[in-house]
Length: 213
Image (cartoon, rainbow, N blue to C red; front, side, top):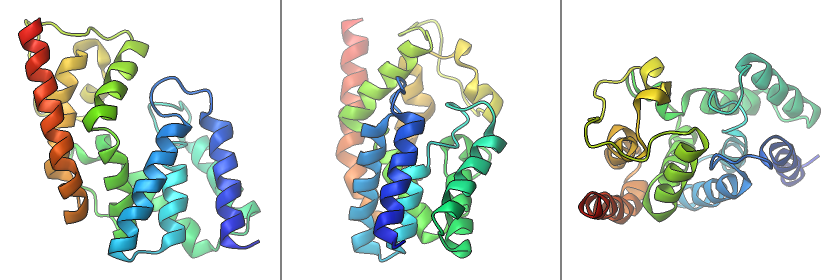
């Protein structure tokens, strides 16, 4: 099986896992991340197969979406083995998708390969800008977060446990606790250039929101 066929099968695998998602981590998100990762990789020259495979698979081991992460990782590995993905590529892909989430960066930026940096940047770019605003509201509403509370300030110096505790977060505070930070946390100059306009749009939105409130 060639790599084009392997990627097609990994797409089908991810579709099976995420096609019913209603938190903003659906296949439309996956396909935007894959497209952005491809575009970044064309300029940066990483391993195209690893970049595309990791972009396809990055949310099927996400703690926000799956409760048994060890089982989720085992399932991904079994799928790649069945598709005869090389062991070195399997190891590389698993390292990327296991380390690239924002929550893993709270204790310090994770060391990632060039391919990992590209996929992380592509994923994080989809969290900001016009679509990022919509996804933040969509996700927060799905988890019954408050929209806004002026008496509840954004939390600072979050660890992973606190970050996952949505009972103390509002949707608007999420912009301060995560989304406004992304622009300066991206890995590549190419991604940072794209992020600038998206960041400014979010700042304008939150400013207008608070004015209207």
